[in-house]
Length: 231
Image (cartoon, rainbow, N blue to C red; front, side, top):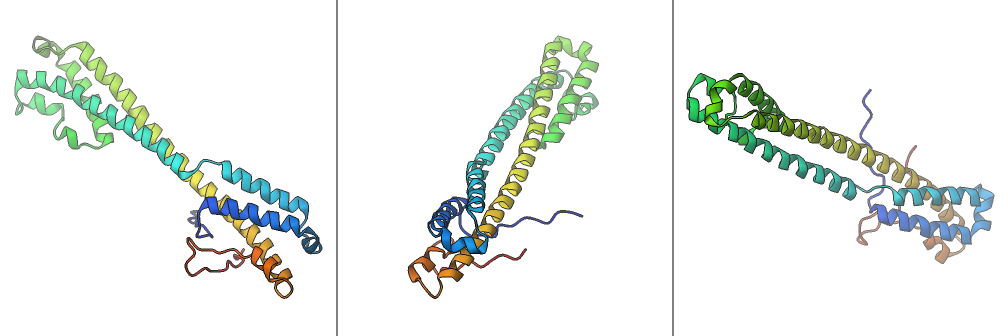
């Protein structure tokens, strides 16, 4: 069965989750004596703090996107180099056979600039095969083994970059899912603990009660007191 999409339980930023979590832990340590009878120990608070610190230090989506963008730029630049190398060969083929000849069409380089990455890769490899086949008749027009070898090298480099990009996309998806799950776990525990704090101080201390309120909202408009998520 396919794993369901993981959604964030909290509406504010990850940075707010970190700062809010540390703030509430500080309040709970201040009020440790009131929490101890409910089983919320110093060890549990330290465990939550460790989880928050680990979460804070993990790679963010901004960094993952930057890594992915860098590989995409390299791939696109390599594709441009490959197109130039293919056109250099095809200029020799056109000079020899023209563009309507069956030999020219065998290279299959139509709409080169519009081809997808996979189609461009296949085209590059085909140009090398067909170019090698007709090399004896195209040598006089300037086609060389070095040109075909250069295209093979570019194809290999281009293919590696395509694979690298796929890996980066996959890594980003995994990292984001892991990050959402980690954030949700922190939020769930944090709400459970602060809900206990609200219960403790609800009828005895307004100031301390307010210390344990979490506003599950992006901004200060229409704040919503967070409730315990279902498990």
